[in-house]
Each structure stands twice: as structure tokens, then as C-alpha cells.
Amino acid sequence: MIPAITDEFKDKAVRLCTSLAQARSETGSERSAVEVAVSAFKDIGVGESFIDGAGNAVLDLLGTEAGPTLLVDGHADSIPLHSADKWSCDPFGGIIRDGRLYGLGICDQKASIGAMVIATEALVRSGWRPKGRLVLVASASEEQMEGAALRPVLERYRPDMAITTEPTDARIFTSQRGRAKIEMRLEGRPSHAGHSSLGVNAASFAAGVIWKIASSFPRLGSSGVQLDINCIDMLSSPYPSVSTIPGGATVRFDARFGPEQTRDSLLSHVMEAAKEVEAEWVGESPGIEVGYVKAIVTTWTGYRVEVDEFADAWSTPHDSPLVKSAISAVGEIGSDSRLGSYSFCTNGSIICGELGIPTIGFGVGEEDGAHRIDESVTIDSIHRGTAGLAAIISSILS
Image (tube, rainbow, N blue to C red; front, side, top):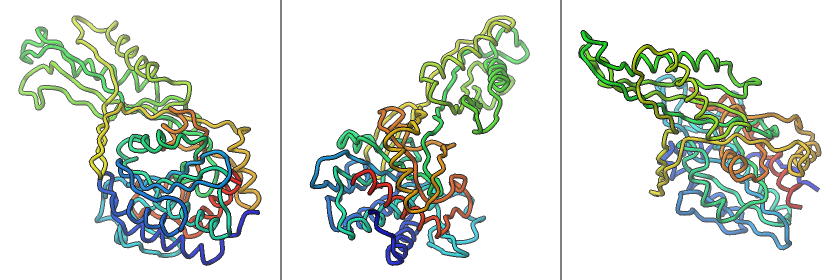
């Protein structure tokens, strides 16, 4: 039997979410939010709570009976504050107005951390203990690179299944497109612009590749699009040029893709476009190199890792035990059981996409509320998210 989330726990969830909203937590300096989370873990009164070397807050709640290990993750960091002068309230004030809680990172995704903590506390207070193991994580540095700081937790606990609590407005999401940053480096030959035939213009060649890719992969958004590649910046050298044909150019592309794409296939799409331009090029063409942009992640504890900016797509079948349990659980409490999919990336990229651990998404707030001026979530979504997470966790580990 799934315990009801009483008004007491609804109020506690809002208070904890407010405390998290007030904790400044731009990525790389999210210590205060992580400490709020680990303090809330300890208040549950059971299990082992700690902050690991990578800066993640962890609650390890081991049950008395054998069973699966379920990991529930929410990242504590936010993007850097932008457009501060355009906010209608203090981004770190924890303001509640017209039924909404405001704060940088509250939708993406500190409110879900509050919901998962109070959901677990409500279960424990009812006498529930997991049949297996429950691991709650308020993770660090997701905004720098999805999953980079979470990996030590995954290696330590090796969960059988997982919930990412990125915003879904208390619905069950079962998939997500992947994302990558691809870098093309062109090496031509500089010359005086008055003698352009002596040079190899890397910038002009880059323009041709950008156009070729834009023509092949139009920017159509997320609806039904499995592959979407867009130029996000280009730099030629020397810059600024003083009557000099640019001998070098670096172009970066953002790619969004489905599970059928691999690390190699994405690079091939860009290289094939470059080869098509080369075939039409008059005269000597520049040298071409294509690879992934390197993400250097340094968390607030000093933990450092360098990885390719490649976050896998992932999908968990609708007939899997995890999805069926989640559907049954939210149905039992009369919540929305429709399934959905993320348009942006989550830590599910490493959990499910790379490591193959069955994963669903379930969190507080609307997905399109992330990274916005006046970022906020509704109080109702906090309540529904808390109730839904309690139901799903109980269903999986009972």
C-alpha cells in the first residue's frame, strides 16, 4: 500500500525546495546546495549519508531483504546566472508568488531533489523499508557534462535501474535524444589577400561545409527528428585578419540524435560533408580533421575529469518491468500515466545510454522551464512530484 503524502509532507517538500532555491549553485560552485541536500538526507534518519570525492551528496538506504538497487538522481548544479537585470525577483530569494516557486536552477532541477528527499522520508515514516537498496543522489556538475561527476557513484553501487528526476511535470519519460559537440579543424595556407591564389582559404572552405550540413540536416527542432546538426560557432585565423587569406579555421557543430547514431557515425556525417565540398573545390583544399570537443569537468571539490562532449541517446522499452511498475504506481495514486520523452540531455545519457541501466525520467516542473529568466516551478508540481516519486520508489522496491 502506497502511503498518502499528507499536508505535513507537502509543506516539508515546499520548504526544502525553497531552501535549495536559496542556495546559490552555479555549476562548479554548488557546494551550498549539495550541503542542503545531504543535511536533508540525514534528517530522514536512516541509511548512510555523505558527500563523495566528486562532490555528490549520497544517501545509501539498504533494506533488510534482498532485492534490486534503485538509483534516484537529481543534479544540484545550475547554469551560471544570466540576464540578472531581467529577473522580476531575486534569483536566489526563494520567492513564492502566484502558486510558483522562483529561483535559478529550481526547475533544472533542484525542486526534484526536494521532492525525492521528502518522498523517501514519507515512505520511511510510514514504516517502509526497501526490498533491496535505494540510493539517492544530489549530483554535481551535470551542466558541465552529463554524467561526468556521477560516474563514481554508478561504479560504486552498480544500480539495476534508475530514475533521473529532470523535469517532466510529474509524468514518466522513457527516452532522450543524445547530444554532442563536434569540432572540425581546417589547415589551409595564409597569403596576402592581393595574391589570394597563393593561399588556401580555410574560412571559405569552412563556409561551404557549414552550408552543406545546414542543407542536409535542417534545424527542425525535436519533434520526430532523429538527427539535427547545427553550426554553433566558427573562428578563422589569423583573426582579425589584416589583408590576409585565413590559413586556419575551426568550426564547432552541435548534434542532437537518436539511439541509432554512434560516436563514429556522427563524425562521419561531418567528414562526408567536408569531402563533398572538397570534391567541388577549385584548386588545393585545406587539411581536414574532425573530432569531439573535449569537456574538462572540475567539480566544487576539485575532482577533475576530461571527456568527449558526447552524451548518448537512450530509451527504455515501454514493456520493461521498470516502466510497467512506474505506470502502475502513478495510476494507483490517480496521477498522469502518459509516457513522454526528453528533448534535452540528462544524466540518463551515462546511466542508460552508455551503461545500459534501465532508466525512466520523473521530476518536478515543465521541461521548457529550464534555463529561463524567472525560472520557476508550480507548488502543485512539487506536490505531484513528491507523491509520484513515493509511489514509484515504493512500487519498485516493495
